[in-house]
Image 1 (tube, rainbow, N blue to C red):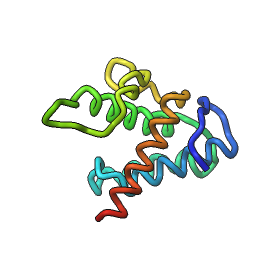
Image 2: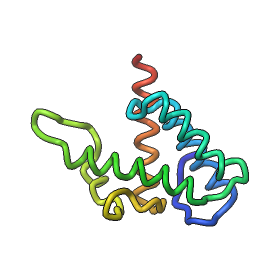
Image 3: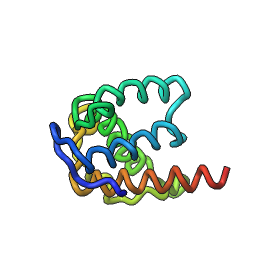
Image 4: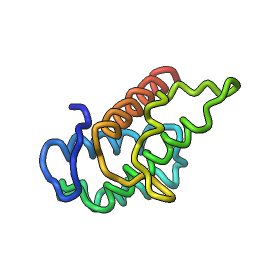
Length: 123
């Protein structure tokens, strides 16, 4: 099941799909150290176990939002990162992503999961 837009406080299948996607990214995306993987997985469990979109979920979403926007901004001729330019429009706060899963963020998270799966198959 793909990640779909969801709001803070929601529960149900869409939130469960978001948690599965985030858990996959935490475990397999190359952008996280082993220590951070363990810490983020434990942090996400605060929301994942009761299956709700709470502050832990929003914080982890915000981390990936910031990473994607940063990757778009860092793209150059010498760094042709395949991240789509439209992900530079992900909603941000001053220091991080805003943690909301709107249409663009859902699309971006699904893209990241696909990227992580491809990297995992190729390693």
